[in-house]
Length: 165
Image 1 (cartoon, rainbow, N blue to C red):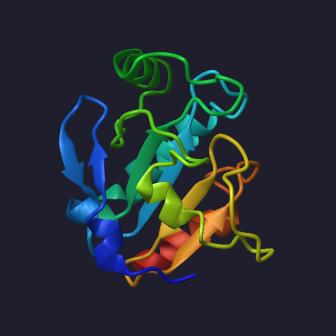
Image 2 (image 1 turned 120 degrees about the vertical axis):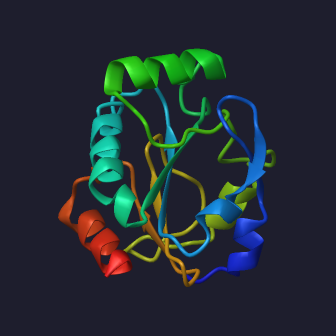
Image 3 (image 1 turned 60 degrees about the horizontal axis):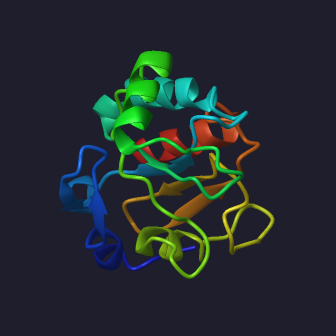
C-alpha cells in the first residue's frame, strides 16, 4: 500500500508531554507506528520495540508509540502515568505520543490513513487490537503487521533492515 507522503507528514500529533507537532521530523526515515496499551497482555512487546529502537534508531528507524484505550480499557491512565509506566517498567526511550483513538469515527487522522494499508493477507480496515504495527517506508509504502506478530519477528526485522539498506 502506498500513501501520499506529504499528507502523512503533515498530520498533527501531540507528544506524550503535550507538545503539538507533526510527523515531518521523521520524513525520509522508516517509521514503525504502534498503538500501545500498558495493561494489555501484549505489553511485553514494549521491550522488543525498545530493542528495535536501540538497534536501528541510529540508522534511521523511528519507533513511535501511540497509546490507545479502545480495547477493553487497557490504557486507562493519563499521559503522565503512561509515560512513567513505560519508562520505569520497560525502559522505553522511543518517542511516545498522547493517547488517541485508532478506530471509529473519532479515529486520529494518522490511523485513518494507516488503516487503508493491507496486511500480508490483503486485509485492511480496523485495527484489531493493541500493538498492531505499521511500518511506514520513506517512499510512502506501508507494511502492516497484526498484534500477534512480535516486534522481533523475522518478517518485521527483515522489512526494517530492507528499509534501512
